[in-house]
Length: 257
Image 1 (cartoon, rainbow, N blue to C red):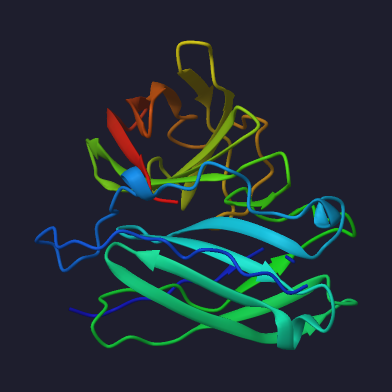
Image 2 (image 1 turned 90 degrees about the horizontal axis):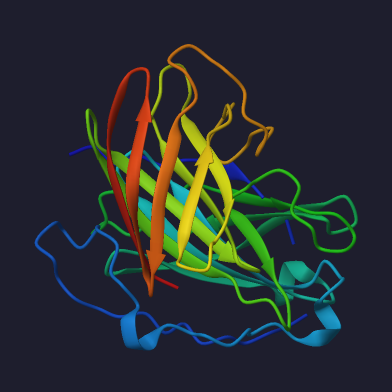
């Protein structure tokens, strides 16, 4: 099988965070998302001093058509090229990456992942693009964690007329979810939804111009029609249905970070 990589754009003192990930074999080469279950971190790891600054903790999901990766970025307050690190997970495989370039007064930082010959897929070089307060402005699959605002990462897929990967981030009771190749003429479709009191979520997708980059969450019509998502978040599992002019089906994501 030929491995693929993707490149997405996202931005971001020295922090140490727990890289607590479960390990197990699921019969698919270890590439399928593994729930963090009892190891999920439920308290924000970010320091108060970094809440409105470009340094600190960022969490992300990277999507290919068939695989996803959950990644933590630790962006250094001083000299981020030497103090920043990142770790992540694809299924049961650990990811290791390091900063390789910086620009725009350290508001643009590129990371590269270490190649692992045992993996069928891993993310390509990724870049974090941020504002001075740490806001990520070019990817909906990256969020800055704050001292009072935990970021939860979800990974999974959708099935039905077709089957590809989905990723989701939950922060401040808002879900942002993207699914690869779910509609015609787009690489990824995303929606945002406030999580209801019963865990209900619903939304209509917007156009994606590339993986993780879109004028979201404003819905925009394209060939094949916007995709409508309806579902619910129950504990650490997100399930629901999707439909558009080219197909319909279900989705399921589990919390992995």
